[in-house]
Length: 169
Image (tube, rainbow, N blue to C red; front, side, top):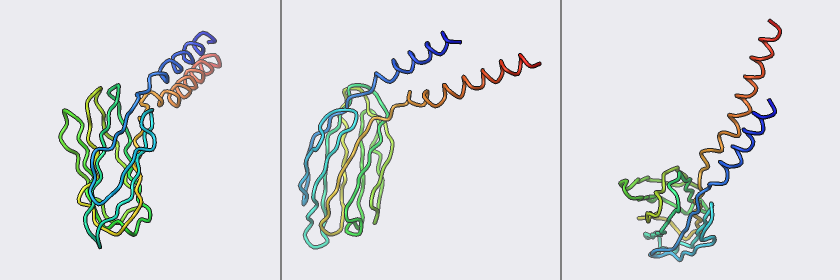
């Protein structure tokens, strides 16, 4: 049993070591200033200030890349939330088509998608309306193998119960 536990522990550590490295760059904006706060790593952050003219339209676009094909969670956060009237979140990662989401009067919006290895992806917030507001965008790699940390102990527990039941029978 000790050998099995050591094997499982070694396996979990080896799986956790293969996280993707993401990179984020500003692309273009209109009626907004944007910057990249954290440019690379397993989590990347961008932010900006939208300053549309009197309930006008603004846009913010970022370029996103990954060194491995990986699922990512993308989150846009708006502060204050009452200043965002509406807008379109658009995401394009080759070879997929654009994923488009319409949002209205929310404090934050998130979705999970796939980044493909060494493919440039576009992350846009377009045709946004509302008053001046601060916004942030966060992209983080979703570690799919992390589920093993929850699944492995349960599986080992069931094996232990089965063995205990066989010994008592």
